[in-house]
Image (cartoon, one colour):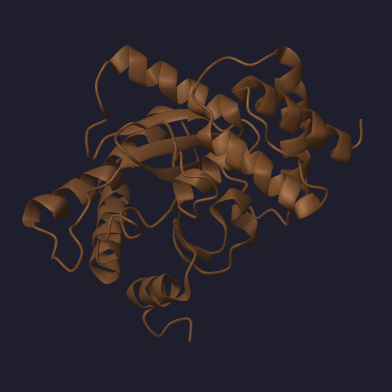
Length: 263
């Protein structure tokens, strides 16, 4: 089965599952976008072994077609702390951090550009199923500042660590409690990474997207929390990466981490 046949199988499976009359486009990009959208809105219910097998082959091939980045490829660092700009799903590390919501099931908005959506879309539907199992066992929403670890399935990383950051009202300043909760997000992720003997961990910019936390304030909290933790704790972690996507965050982190040392 070639890539196009795999895509057609996956689309037909998900459409038939919904029992809706959805026309499959001919254009390859539109087909791929439809697949992502159907995955995004799909509830955490079982699928057939054949679906998992074909989905995994399809998504793993997509992952391997990227220019994956390991810690050895990152040239901006100071000791264990590293800075890298790009798509977090391109990182071949032990774990990446997902900025989740309190339901911990991923983003259900089709094609949304939040990191929660991007990670779940590239990982596959098993990630939502594992998160659902965790949440059913917990029997309540995830607390702000806590973290849970899952497998990464078809991502380049081995694990995903999900954490819920504080949400700030538009045009408001974060309170002292908000700052402490954001600090707790970073510390919880570091602790869970150490508990699982992970050596490399990549953080996204928690809470700075749709949760509206001011970027520079968030970066200062992130850097201080990580450095304090690494300085004060015995940990398996050898590399902690601050992954940024937009230029504004890159310049903020570069200034705070390196000052004028790297130009």
